Image 1 (cartoon, rainbow, N blue to C red):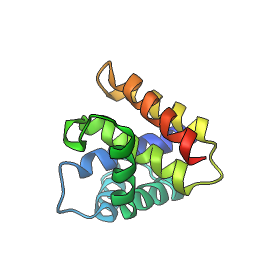
Image 2 (tube, helix red, strand yellow):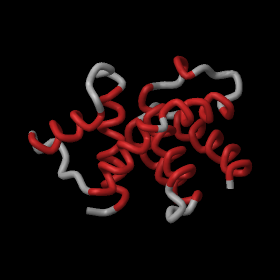
Image 3 (tube, rainbow, N blue to C red):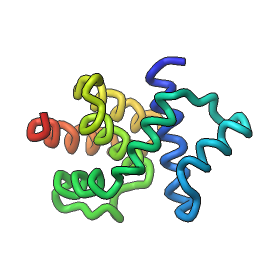
Image 4 (cartoon, rainbow, N blue to C red):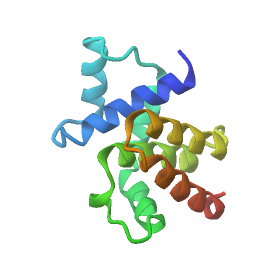
Length: 132
């Protein structure tokens, strides 16, 4: 499985979390594996758990750089993509920032509304200048 496919699986589970607030992300992961919704991998599980473990900090970063937008106004798809990308940028030193941004944009192009990819690209681009 490619890293892109692994990110997509983590995205799917993080997006699902938005509709299952009471369910722990580890349970969502295990359920998805058991029911063959995803194939899973160490990276998928690590990215998913690390994102959720740091979601408050990550959401703070998203709010900081989404000038004029509250989290509630950001689509659930774009929010899940942003959370994963910020997690990679902040906590995975072995992944180049540009790769995280590009992968986030590609996920948006596949799953989000037309304007979400540009929004995500601009927000992550602005943040990356300050972060790294």
